[in-house]
Length: 334
Image (cartoon, rainbow, N blue to C red; front, side):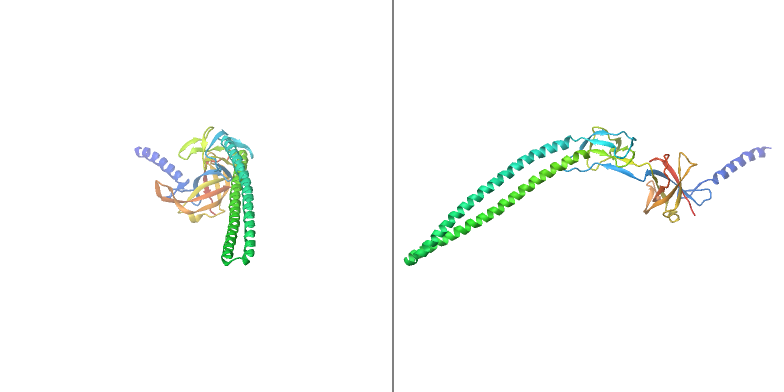
């Protein structure tokens, strides 16, 4: 009688263990096997197929910018909606400063044009004077042929000096024109650069109202990569900072992985049954759209277990599928 009492609970425990062993099994690599032992099951996370990230651009001549308006985290947005407003005060100050610079450089340009005109008139006057001297000395040389040899040599020397002075003035005039033209060219470039800066800054102001090109849910960016605090009004953002994201909710994909032991058992286009942890009995059709080329440790605490990154595109659109949800992927074997 005592043996029967001991045998009954032992039998119940054995049946329970047998029933558990008939369910999904985990192999040595950590992957789960389906009941038939053929299909591989891995966990993953849903992300949007189409997502737009809003990164602070590097605006020319503008430093960090302050946020003066931002939507709440998780707000639904439609295409064209305003999601972030940056403070335009810095840009407007830049415009005023550059307009002041433009007035100064335009005045300098006008002065240089007037100075060039005066310099040209001055050189032309000196050249005319040297031409008159040259002509006079030439006449004197012609007239000296009846003079003594000493007088002729003096007149020829004076003529030669007049010829040299005339050539020198002409060279100085040509060099002066080249220098003046180059200075004017540089000044006009300086003016054009300031005009471009002003035009660029004026076109920049509408861009400080950041709008989403797609519909979805707005996710506020973090203040920096080292903390989880989200951006808020009055925060400053620097070029390269991620200010937020808008994932489109229509189509989803799963970011998952496959064990290196099972890598050769999957291929692009292979069918996958995707199940939400919240709805384990509902299977969504999916297929493998990407298989990583490099093997990596799944967990740095257990570097011996290696995996390949895999992406699974969910074929159907369903409002129950949201970014960030945990799912299981059953890789169906033919």
